[in-house]
Length: 259
Image 1 (cartoon, rainbow, N blue to C red):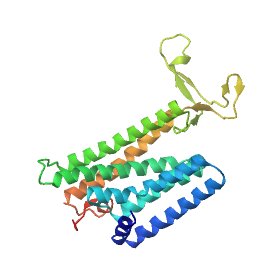
Image 2: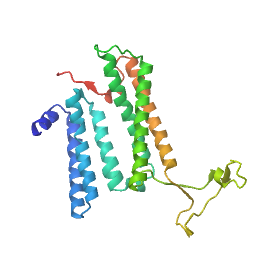
Image 3: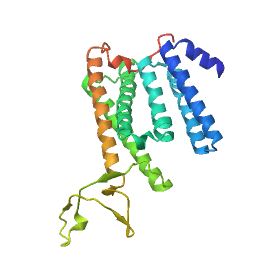
Image 4: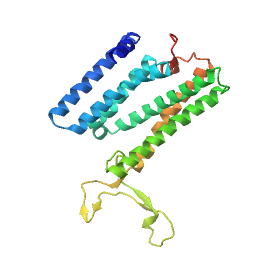
């Protein structure tokens, strides 16, 4: 195990190694503080992050890939921002757009990996697949959107079965619903300027109607779409120019040349 990581560090750029060490130390510090508070759920999250930080080296080793430095640094920061800052430090609650930024980044990264997987097959002489740049980027885009859908399934499942709140609620000041139609004719009744909400006869301290997850899910889908679309555009010109795209090349894994 030690020899594997020494070998991994040796062929990495200094910027990646520095970011990797700093973030791991921060995670370990957070884990120690959680242990002192006897917050074992947070300890588990920290252990999960430490495991996730091993995934880049595992991908490179088992798939014979070389991850560009920019891609690897973004992945490391993404994991830290999602789990340590988002979950443990409550950034998902304190910063309204934190979740939005992460989902857009996830859409971008998923499209990059989807593009990489198909592009490697596209260039492999053992396979007869030869996709055009347009179709290749379309597959990468659909791959990213599929990952986004699966993640929303996971969020819904955890909320429904485990009683979590991964699908964050949204306070609305206007709604439309056919259930409010007194005639029963399936006509949407629109209500504006909602200021209070009651639950079991008790007025809640909320200045509107509490939507349970729907708006959060649809916003996640939308920003995932934007992230996937952005990379798909970069990926299209990258393949169109036969691997000379300046931006996409920093985010597309390559086959290692020393094997």
